[in-house]
Image (cartoon, rainbow, N blue to C red; front, side):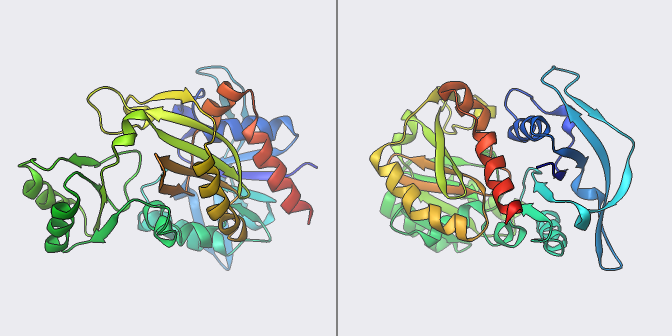
Length: 314
């Protein structure tokens, strides 16, 4: 089966080919004989009932500095493609939401991965709230009195922007931290949305586990251990990737969320687990497959393409 694939992502020229999950997907798709096109989110256009993009033919190879060859741009009707991979990085802002609205016009005739409606309705830090028995004590609010009450109750807390990504703007605030009020003032100045506040999980010192689910089924995991003196475990801020197996609790979490993800057309998802708690469900542009592949000798990108090809064959 040869499919025509549009890859909607940020500039491919600047990615880290040893870590980028979209690059791994492109390599595997090309290996399977699929025809690849690349375009930027800002290249999307809606005109006369069609969703268009100024796209370029793409070929990839695992050669640093020469990993992507792009042909001449052409305006394409995305409705004529078999699949569109929506893989640009957050932030999950109005530009991101607008892209989901545009791609909704072509899905499911053109299979958009992940389903744009479900992506729009599943922000990482909000979707988890539909699984209250799985998440740590959590508060989402703009009300400072509620935040202070939460801090008095739990003492040690983490404050995050509701629509942030990559660990940006995440603060661990201990019981005696005198910067707390100034921090809330800063959040008020930077963000219009409520903040999310959670009880601090000391288990994070042992790692924040990223688990990849493909069509609702766990495919592998990598533990991300924060660097000394750092509260965040994200790899790009110094977290160390460590080989990991799924615990019984993590399998229970996957069993609870997996069927919901599959039903919503969320084929490629990364969930984050700290200790016994689910903290995020990443549906926009999840990462981690290359790290897991290296540790486990697996090919998660192959599982993702299997799921896509199965859906296209129906």
